[in-house]
Image 1 (tube, one colour):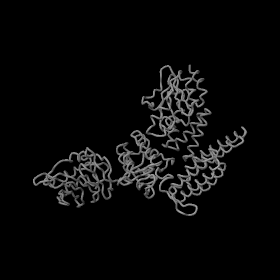
Image 2: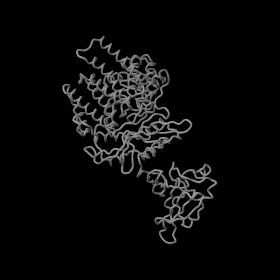
Image 3: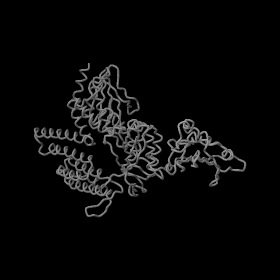
Image 4: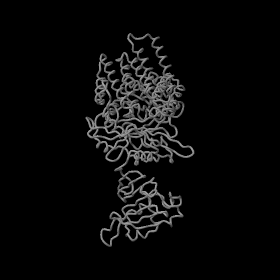
Length: 633
């Protein structure tokens, strides 16, 4: 009994309801309305599925007055007696005065599914849901959700992304005000604040464009484990209800039905409303590669996690792991191996007792061991990685298996390169060749994993150093295909675009300097040096200073700001004394400019000729810079 097109055209939009809001009608006038007049009332919010009669049945519908719960009104029934709509009017303040319509209730299959409490709120009922939206000053638009379930919050997120409606998404995203009410502090609080700060109009718009969810696609389901209560403790003033690692299934029906995952991460309950923490991640609709997955900020090593210790006793793992990591940071070469082993055991216990976090804990265990190998303080690290690989092959995902294999390949090279006494040049060269051979095979075998993408990016960088641009492009294209819209995938796409610009006019995104002025990549009569640099590399800065007078230098600093709130002041200190203007991004090598150009390291230079054509896209050896500039004259 859905409304056919002819009536839809007459009732399109919520404008009819807006015109109806505030109209004062006498009860007798309400009762006298014909079915077609009653049907002019439409839900005040979009995407509400209610019943209307077919055109031919409109005149057969019946209207009846009612008095209920102190209210009077009129109900509209379909020819078969099914309730379609009820208009509720409050009793008149005084005898002889007009009564005002306060509520319009809409039905589906004879059951109320939606209610407009005019000028105040919109409510969903029964099969329509449980949402309760507070109307804003215009008395039409939902300003906030006083009640909304996890499923409905993610439905709103999908609808917002489909239509690139940032305001709609903001209503279901955790805000700074919401965050303050949670009473969180410590490292997890800092991570959540970063997620909140990431929800900007530009970031949302880019995400919506990237995901490209079709108009006819719908929210299909919310996938997650059971909701969790995180108990109050040292870094938490009150209990928090949350979902971890949430995934939404987005579905498109029709002749070519499709479904794809959209990864939300965490959901948190604020009052009676569930909120999304930060922005979702995902790949363009219909182009899923499996390179993206859900992750959790609220379920790290700190908090409410418990695990079984070696003795079988249940103990709080959060504080134990926090203490273990703190000790590792200040460990000496003598006690590092023992502390590393203890931390790994804690992580393995946590993985065993929390199946949903198995991969996360195993990955952390691998990284702890690998960090020890990198620092040279874990002599038996390669053997420890091998034992972890056996455990991961039994219970880990393909992603985790890939990560441990990648770490093993790199660790084997490190043990030779860092050995004492130092290896002979021939031994080191042989180890380097084996490392490259193993990594190449690994990148091919695990191409669809995050670790495989990282390996391909590393191999591409090696080819860039050798100026083998075609080979580098092949690796970058592999990553771009498999990693999709992840940060690594976008950086690979940027690298391909940069390399393919050689011999062509320079094409750059709009960037601004730290002082807020727009970047100018072209100065008449001068070549342009796009210089990616870090404050730790003063030698490279000095080399560019030597040739700065000959060129237009655009500095792109890749330091990461320790605090988003004080980033501008931080960068003003870093760039002081540098004789060129600089782009500064708190995210460093993961910032907008580095991603757009696919730059993985610093120093790095893109050289543009006086005519605006790219001369070199990858000058990493700054000793070449002066000679290349001379050749341009």
